[in-house]
Image 1 (tube, rainbow, N blue to C red):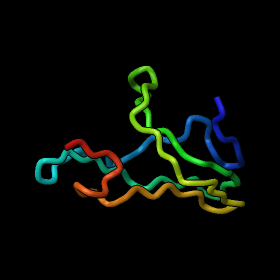
Image 2 (cartoon, one colour; image 1 turned 135 degrees about the horizontal axis):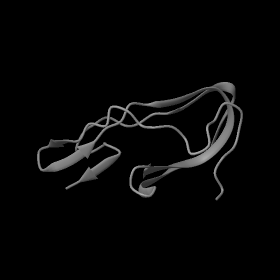
Image 3 (cartoon, one colour; image 1 turned 135 degrees about the vertical axis):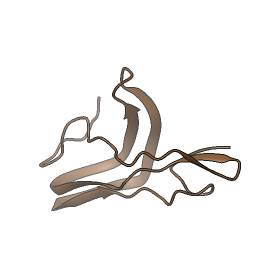
Image 4 (cartoon, one colour; image 1 turned 90 degrees about the vertical axis):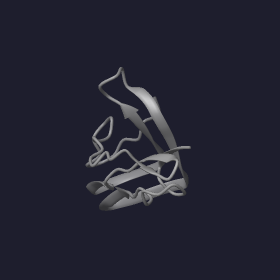
Length: 92
């Protein structure tokens, strides 16, 4: 429910790539390649990382801090650096 719709956005999003679990000191971290929907017209307030191979169970809900919009341009989700203090998923 309440999934964004728009030109050149695929329902259910897109698969994340370069899933690279590793450690930084005593913190486990995960990094992903940035995700771009090209020439998209869409507005989103956040995104959901979920496991499509395990009943679509949620991994993380991400709040963009407000509406983000692209109009016939690239809509890109930029993931932070893979470090113990910045990675999108950190377990210490």
